[in-house]
Image (cartoon, rainbow, N blue to C red; front, top):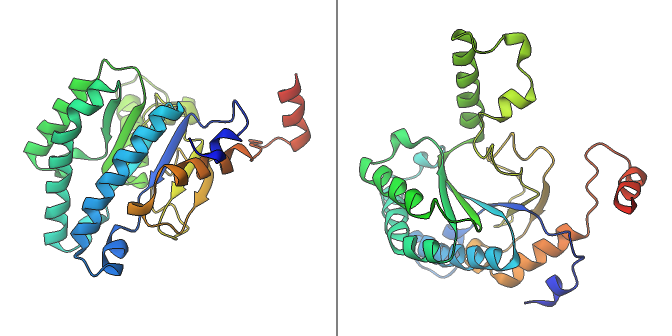
Amino acid sequence: MSDTMTNSPAGKLPQHVAIIMDGNGRWAKRRHLPRFAGHRSGVEAVRRVVQCAARRGVRALTLFAFSSENWRRPQQEVGLLMDLFMTSLQRQMKMLRDNNIVLRIIGDRGRLDPRMQEQIAAAEALTADNDGLTLTVAVNYGGRWDVTQAFRALVAEIEAGRLRANDVAEEQVARHMCLHDLPEPDLFIRTGGEQRISNFLLWQLAYTELVFTDLLWPDFDEDAFDAALADYAKRQRRFGRTGEQVEHIQDA
């Protein structure tokens, strides 16, 4: 364990960490390699971070693997990404089960290849009885899609007479969002130097602490993850209160 985590205050560990894994292509380009080599190296970074999060005691880790906008990339790259996802899922299923990790996939599965949908369902079923880290991977996901599908569900309830429009509040919306049964992310990390959330978990990130790093995703390792946790531990989360109110609650 790195010194950054050793010095972090107890009780300030985020329950839920969300990550945009950015920079695979640039990592490969700097090494005069094809973009796909960066994606392969990115898979190794995923494995490292998942294992580190589980060891640290993080309850939930959500990774943005493929956005609804990524279909705009060259067709060959999209095909290679999908093949890599399938291969990685097949190889890691036993490791996830044996390490007590729950795997969940969020996003619009309708556009995914039927074989991939079957593989996802099998992996989720294999790990469903685990009770350790919940690893959520967002595939063909977009925050606006998430909000839209939640409102469609609410409209269906209203049309069926199970809910009145005047009774719709944040709680009703939230229960139809992806990740509704998990704590909202405490910490968001984006690698690759960009400082935006890129249509990721728009509803869920409302009060999340944000950390941006210039490290490209394949270079993101245990020390970098620990540094982000240590940064989070130094912050005071107020949720609309004053700093004095938060200190009073903590001292009570």
